[in-house]
Length: 80
Picture 1: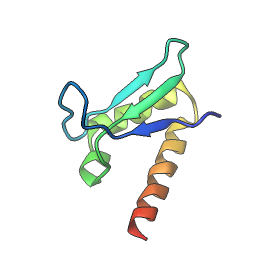
Picture 2: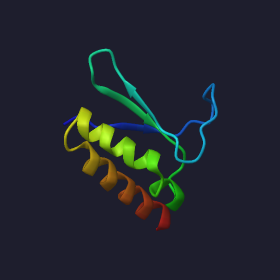
Picture 3: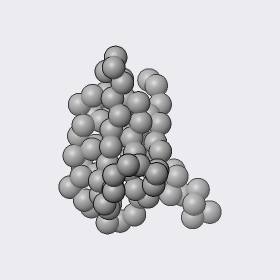
């Protein structure tokens, strides 16, 4: 299973509001990147975040859990 690349980018041509996400889907149907604001409790509770997880799971089964585990590990590294 290929890894989903996550990128936080404030240099996009449009404004991302808290909870907004972008899923880049390549021409061959693979997931390219998931662009989103920094994770915090407000983002985790947003409708957009949950719909993004549904999209990832639909496009590539198992990715939802992989994404959640990645975010949990990333949070642990920041706290340590």
